Image (tube, rainbow, N blue to C red; front, top):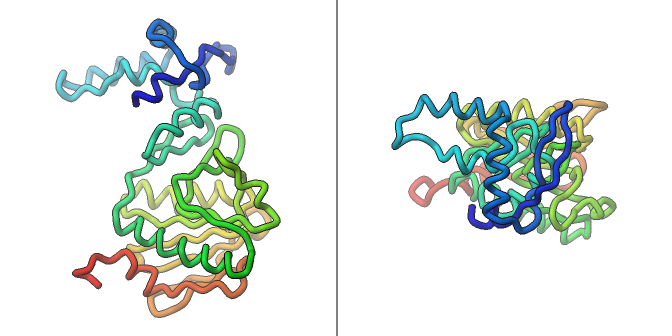
Length: 260
């Protein structure tokens, strides 16, 4: 968090008639940070935190003073989000001005991501078709909305979208589903909607719990099922003809040595 506190700016913007927020971009002093905290004392977000703080004992109470240095939910600008997340190792997403913090991925999750990414990069490089990257890497979907898919693929014709700080809509994204309920709902419902609205042609949902891979293809404004691949089958891509991923090997990549 130290780096975050060193990067701020006193610029304001107006949302719905109320003056709010600052871009966390330039060096700031302790006095500036105190002024932010004072400004937020009169904001409804502070009232909500004050109410919430009454539910915690002294030992359990979160550091509300730190939280008040940042914009309340619904008021995060894109600049604030980008500057804040550049100093973090934790995945953080921005959805319509609201911050979402997914669960920290497990080792098996990351091993599956790594295996799939290696398959994709090898396939793309051999055919000079484009490039791919894994999270953490931010993808802008619309105003005040950024997601961090587990894997993003950009075809050669669209490499201009593959920016240094963040990318625009990719050609293919993949999510390896975590086993908590919030993550499953996010990947199967929220991100499916967000990625379709952004016009991403193909979305892979890799589910270690169900041991299946869903390949969704954009048809008009929504996704249709291109293929559902279970253990014993080989997943294929619509926009990458010839790309194949053996489902057994994908999930075996996430197994511990004792499970292998």
